[in-house]
Amino acid sequence: MAVPRVFISYSHDSEDHKEWVRRFTTDLRTKGIDAMLDQWDLSPGQDIAAFMTNGITAADRVILVCSEQYVTKAEQGTGGVAFERLIVTAELVRTIDTKKFLPIVRSNRTAKKIPNFLGLRMYVNFNVDTEYDSRLEEAVREIHGVPLTAKPPLGPNPFSGAAPGSPMAARVAGPSGLTGAGRAVLDEPWFTTHLDKAGTGLSALGLSGSMELRFALHEPISKSQLELLNAVQKSEIRTFGWPIAVLLQNRDEYRPKPVSDGIFAEISIPRSVMSDWPSYDLWALRDNGDFFLLQSLFEDQRANGDLFFDTRIVRVTEAILFCSNLYHTLGVAAEARVSIKVTHRGLKGRALTTASRNRHVFPSTATEDVSETQIVDSIAQLRPRVVEHVMQVTEPMFMLFDFKKFEGRVYEEIVANFVAGRVS
Image 1 (cartoon, rainbow, N blue to C red):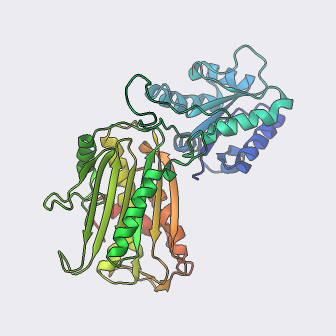
Image 2 (cartoon, rainbow, N blue to C red):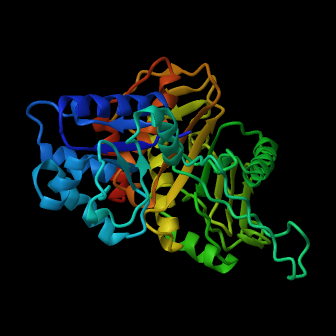
Image 3 (cartoon, rainbow, N blue to C red):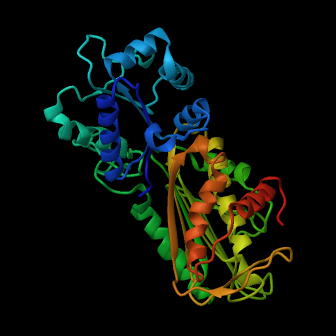
């Protein structure tokens, strides 16, 4: 599962307090939480204000260690705490009910446990040292979104006349994409059903290479089939070949169809029917916002047996931007979180090369068949972090081709060109 990022905000009360914060942050990291701390991540010569601004803005959660001195500094507007308060307050003004900011109380015996700018937020109380382990578990569960007591699923209205169990149970996932029952939102049977169908369709055309996408909101929405269709139409990016979730309205067999839980399209094109090569796309968008796509590899239309590294960067860039467009168009809140899984299959035996004459790559061959990566982020951060996410998906795949690795500037150039409407 994706790793939640956490920024630690605290005041330098004493060496003992700094040591306690370091121990706490270390414990978070040992439990799968990418916690950032100035004692490790801030070096001489760095801009302190930029460190705090970037750390708080980019984090999934911000933990505020509310010692007595921290609260006093926040109220009086002194020191680094005052600067961080300005950043936090700006986000709170935009979204008052955000759960991003998690106060914990330590070395604070006063009646005022947290500063005023945090409002009436619930906190985790670390005041009693002998309760440290249990309080740590409480904080870790909150960050991972796995509460000790899971909220039971919502059942049907017993007076609605509907068959028991027919409405889809409410699904709410934590920051890492796990529901209270410990199930990943991307592993629901809906995705597996479409994967099975797509696998059959791909094989029928004699194809093996494919890219699969799965998107799932952590808090589902509810949309009609017409709303879903309109959102796809407005979200497509027509920069490179057929766009993700291609809409072909001129052929009835390829046109998207309304189904009971959303919309669905399968475009299976045998060789010599519409082109000189077979092509396959299957995509579906569910009424709760789940999205699935499996498409054959574009490379097989030009050079059977190759994988173009620049084409893969372009396609994954398109996937991230399409995801951002889709949920923005559907009216999903900017701070809502989404899980994304990108899977490439049929890699074994392919040679990694390039589609561009302006780039040279010494071909190398993959010995593994599948590369799969999952991303979890807020809708608002998908575009700002697009290069980072594209690297997160494609670097492990390229590594399968005899340790192939490309410099960050190569990713930045290809992504920037695509965003600008160019493919080079």
